Length: 553
Image 1 (cartoon, rainbow, N blue to C red):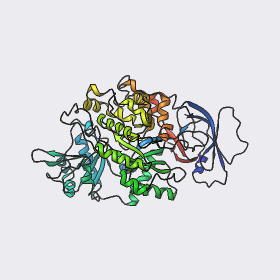
Image 2: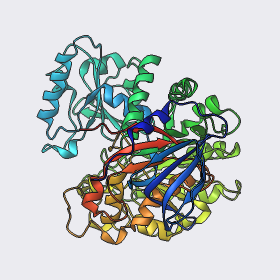
Image 3: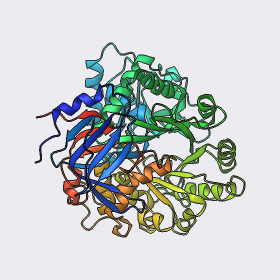
Image 4: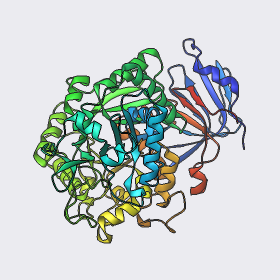
């Protein structure tokens, strides 16, 4: 393995550069994408004190005779910093501070973990966590409050499902929330009930989660600051230098601003407000300017059309194959959704709509078609997930500049569940990356972290193979929907920047853009898919400064 960059370059994170100081990162084996998304190889970068690239050197190019700072890369592999186009930043951090049930492979294992966690934290008034997934359990059913009561009878418990679209409460939490058999679910929500009588069973789906969340004590500002620091660490160590934060609240925004003011904002955040109220409260009459050297901007709003496939909240055109009595949930109906989209577009905010089921996606595509007649210009309407689309609707994605913000690892994690939920006849439009791109829609890839790990190398491997880390299924699942390696890299770099109106600022290692790059232990364009998944980030640089470095073993 090639050796690390000189340890001395770590000083670049703290020095105060003099006016017009230049840094030359030389003797590197670099790759980036050109304006046509073709691979360009380079061997050196000259970066000014503002963090922008002023010159890209190729083999044989003459270097400047004198620079202020010189970093010898010793032939290491360098690539652009990666952009995760759909994360929940603060949830990543809070997941590090609460109970993580993502490894539970049965209900009994989850209950054992919950009981042990409660015993280890007797001082906590609430037991909070996330990550459970009944589809990974032999039971294949929602858990109950009674089962939680058996392990934590003395304190309220609230545990979010892995996708964030359902929550599991014990009897104490349900009582504190005041939910009874007579309680009606809010629009776009569902309360799982015990028959007969209708007593709450313990799981709340989509908008119904708000009933319990209303009584969960909110985090303190210092808790938020700690969670954000942990989230940045999780992202940077995996090579993610910029994110689209989907669902930013005023509390989240203030956390990011505090970090920016204190000089601890290391990643770039393209922020999408959690609904219209937060959009207006944070940004006011229009998108904010870029702040902190292009590290923070609120440019859009996140809205919801439906729920998630795992909790059967995704809105389908036909009933679920494994639950013929339901077609899912519309969190926001057609008229209301179109009104919310119009309100945001009126003030030139970018609109990003969560849509997973084929009915929800058709509705959003239709709404964009209608609204584009009024709101002209470069709008870059986004559909978040675009997970299950009726093939007859896919050609419409190419109209009106729609961006499909999709998560490759969802396909490998969900495929068995998707087969059960949809049946074989509806799989043709599932996670259909190549068909979506062929329609003319722009792809932006992400992870939906903390639903999945924010690991873009796993995402790229999934995108080019449609196989999981176990190499299954052989030949790939619906392999006609793979994308090329270049297209996958573009969707995690230049495509992600374009999706957030950040092109020309970051996303590629070219003159004029920010020097956000990674030092990695293998060539991402030549590694086999299995090796690509195992890529180790050695260093992460943002704005021409080293912000994270792997510790020597």
